[in-house]
Each structure stands twice: as C-alpha cells, then as structure tokens.
Image: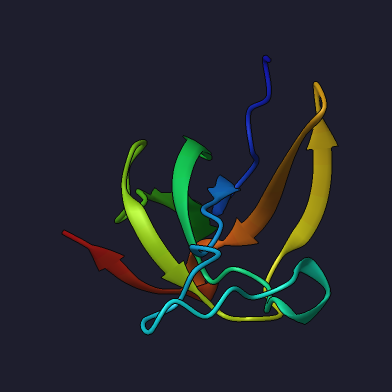
Length: 94
C-alpha cells in the first residue's frame, strides 16, 4: 500500500470491538456499532494557515478515538480504512 493523505488528514485502520461483552453476551454482526477506535497508519503534512504549514499533533502508530460518523470509508488492498481530518480526532489513547 502506498497512500499519502493530503493536508490535515490521517489514514486510520479501525479497531473492531470485541465480540463478547462482559457477562459473556455475544453481539451479532448486525447489532454491532461502528468502531470509534483506530490506529493511525499514515498522516498528511498538516494544515496550511496564512501560507505556513502547521504540523500534525498525532503521529503514525497512535491509537485514537474519533467521532462515530467521522471520515470517509475506503477499501485499500481488501482492507477497510478511514480518511479523517485531524480535527475529528477526539483523543489519543496511551
């Protein structure tokens, strides 16, 4: 894969939630919510303001939380990814 996001966009690999919740309840695929956690695979150079590039605050490999309906879903080499803006990232998990 050779994809480079532009401006302040990041390419995220969503992390699927576990199929079994506390108490041993198994959630079927049709009832699962969209994942809101992922790992950054690629980042863009940053946004441009007044002719200056402002670098990204996140980096490759960061685990992040993002908004439920954020981004654009894409399929690259048979894998599902999201392109989202840096401003749609809610938190970096450590």
